[in-house]
Length: 205
Ligand code: HEC
Ligand code: HEC
Image 1 (cartoon, protein in one colour):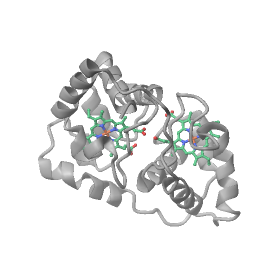
Image 2 (cartoon, rainbow, N blue to C red):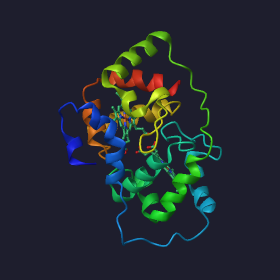
Image 3 (cartoon, rainbow, N blue to C red):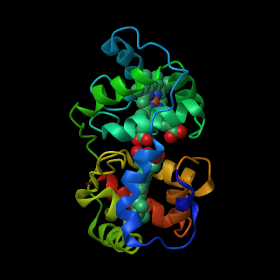
């Protein structure tokens, strides 16, 4: 992430809008150290099924949906897992075994699949209202866009697993997920209860 985004000051609106572009520049491929793609990508993708699900429904609520997630975002996360910028024992090992071409191909492979319905209940009216107040105050939709569908390097949040959403927001806040200091700084302003409200609301969209 560009150093600018580490600032704790409120960012001017143009920077918020420019974020996807900045992230794109930050994501410019590093040359060298590339391994050949090798192997059929559908075959590699079967490795992912044991956790992310055969039909896109993760086998455990702590595992995120990757079917139908935005392609640029999927690639960035695989890259960050491999580099250790986003710490995860499971995904770190997995991503290190992939070449950059594999990561790009896997990101595309999963992005074009349909987003699976996890069957999570919509939040009740009071929770939804509270979530909307928080989301407006933090301008979540500036980046995650209408309906929280995200685009490009910004992830879709709508219909994502509630357990995963809460865990990862807590990880951003504690710094355990350190690959986006801007998200970390933003979520530090909210209590755990607020995060639970947001997770319940987003999961039910
Ligand atoms: C052993 C179980 C397991 C396997 C196999 C696995 N994953 Fe994961 N994956 C996880 C878990 C758990 C997380 C959440 C990690 C965290 O937040 O700490 C995750 C997170 C991710 C994310 C981040 C999604 C988001 O919303 O931020 C991506 C992308 C991903 N996995 C892709 C893959 C791909 C591609 C494969 C196959 C090459 C794969 N995973 C195989 C368990 C697994
Ligand atoms: C300035 C733009 C911006 C704003 C505002 C923003 N986000 Fe994000 N958010 C991002 C980006 C970019 C990522 C992806 C970070 C990465 O590369 O891992 C992200 C990631 C996330 C994730 C992780 C999703 C996953 O699949 O792991 C969650 C959850 C999230 N944001 C929730 C929120 C909520 C809730 C708000 C409002 C309180 C918010 N965001 C406001 C840009 C933003």
